Length: 278
Ligand code: 2AM
Ligand code: CA
Ligand code: CA
Ligand code: CA
Image 1: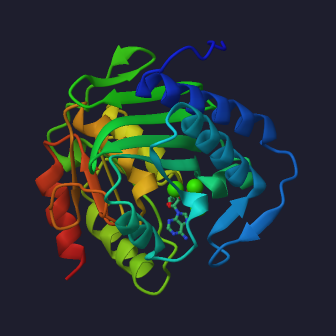
Image 2 (image 1 turned 60 degrees about the horizontal axis):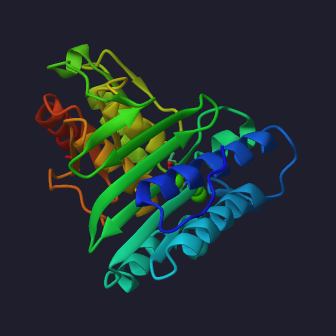
């Protein structure tokens, strides 16, 4: 439903509007031919739909908040450290929107319906708003700092599982086949026999949202970027969970290797992952 633009809309209203509009549009493009580019390697795909979604979101945000800064995946040159350099250039920004226009592009390209739009807003480096929208299931996950996290308008809580052996976990297979992928294989060998089972659905932001919703008890992945994690990290914190780096340091925008859980299993999962890294 279109609301008229009158006065200054809330950050949350604009984020929801962006995510819903972009998500609906992306969904109409699923299964139709899209021209593909390989960004950095054959494992790093981008489509015209990624770029179109980002442009749509950026234009809407800039219309409402012209003095805000914007960091979107498709506006950054590809490469492993580019996102941190871009972030460094923007660290003076008072309000910074951090956007992944499609998280799960490989899924999108293959018609595997696990991809989302991820939108976060940071105020002086602290994430104050996170929205993850899954158009395939029409699910919108939203959190505002200090106000809780919601899906379908209902408050989210992380899962109750107390140990890895009763947990459903998720990971992502890294694009870096030299170092990160072999380490991820070792991590799987360490964690899989201890967990109830493991999923790898190909969207880090969706996995983060599912940890917040209690559908997964934990998620870890290496080599990610701020736009993959910023919104999801607030969803999880506001649902009572815990998000850290691989060494247990508290989540911040520069974290690339993430461990996100309901909280109770966090130390046990960190320990299993650490053992795999030895
Ligand atoms: P994307 O779809 O926005 O690119 C899946 O394991 C996760 O890794 C997704 O969130 C995906 O985001 C991200 N990803 C895919 N290719 C990547 C690459 N080459 N480098 C870093 N992250 C990548
Ligand atoms: Ca990408
Ligand atoms: Ca992504
Ligand atoms: Ca993306």
